[in-house]
Length: 135
Image 1 (cartoon, rainbow, N blue to C red):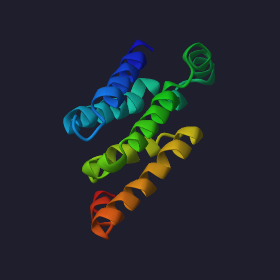
Image 2 (image 1 turned 135 degrees about the vertical axis):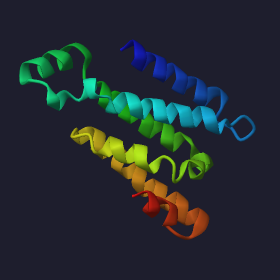
Image 3 (image 1 turned 90 degrees about the vertical axis):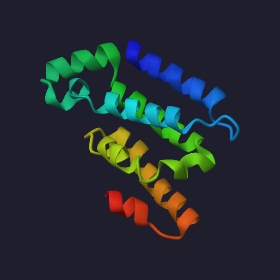
Image 4 (image 1 turned 45 degrees about the vertical axis):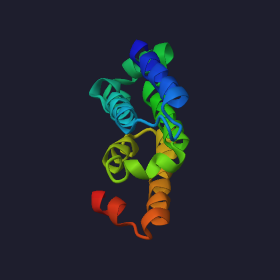
């Protein structure tokens, strides 16, 4: 939970200080997305690999932290606005990793990011070349 809180504080700072056109910092945002996806996909959070008793105990005590950070990643993606195109195609692979996590609500939250990536690319280049090359 401490790490999750730290990532959320990082996200808050990005939204407050580094989102507008004048202060946008691509590397900071890129680091956030990679850090958050690495947290979400780490082996120790893959609850389906645990016994049902251990899984229930973890869920009761901490909830599914993958879902929490996944929703945060989704929200951060949509906050990017016109900056989204700067993350295509680099973020296609990490977002794909997120959608492979067998958690229904997480998938519902992250799969639309792919559609949004394709829309962003199409509006910018009139093609789907960058996204399709990464798939």
